[in-house]
Length: 345
Image 1 (tube, rainbow, N blue to C red):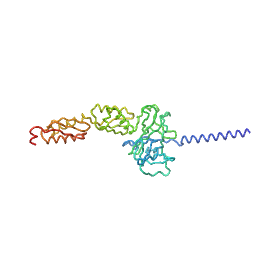
Image 2: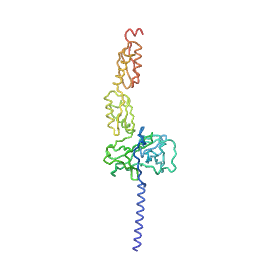
Image 3: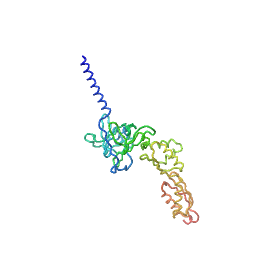
């Protein structure tokens, strides 16, 4: 009786141990950590805008959702983007890098068709998964993986975006700082204390949307929205168009600087003051128009010119010369011909 009870206990222990091991294998995929190659001269620097793959984001074909991005695979020895894994209902589909048309941090846009690898995967690839744990060299967790950035021209993965502590919570980690990718997550070549030193991150779409929302919410700048275009590339905001004066330009720049994730502002705005001054100067200095006495005003690229010219040829030249000034969209030439010259003409 005692031996039977002892045998039952042993068998029960084995069942529990096997079940626990199976559960661990399910919750924590097996496999060794894969070392990621460091930067080299062959790797090259990014040569164009950064493409951004949101893990968990939609993948579209001709505007129709094809699936959800679950994984990104890269070649560890070259850091080249190899493929993405799409969750499409009950199965996962492997999409090669060549099928990616664009990725803007929200949606990955794909070609209409592509050829999958025979087994749908590559055992040598490093796999980046949604919400993967990210740790520092001291073993402390920094956050979870949210997004993968790559350079379209070279095809190389250039950065990871991690969601962690602090404000802003998302930080950009260059691939130079990624040491390895494995079952337990991503290990970075930095300590947890370096977290707040990393570059804050927001997608270009998020930044542009925030800029437009902020301009719309400010009664003084709402009208300026019509004459200012906002472009965002790799977190650098470029402003083009027209502003009333330098005060309005500075007000817009100050608003944009307050938006999380903005790294730099490139002001290419032309103020009404600058434009009217530039047109006045070019009329005064040009031999064909220097004899004219004019007054110039500008608003959103439209220039109004009044005054007098000694003859019709000079008056017509004013129109031509003013139109050639950068930023001038429309010229309203109201210059009159003065004195005897008018009668002679």
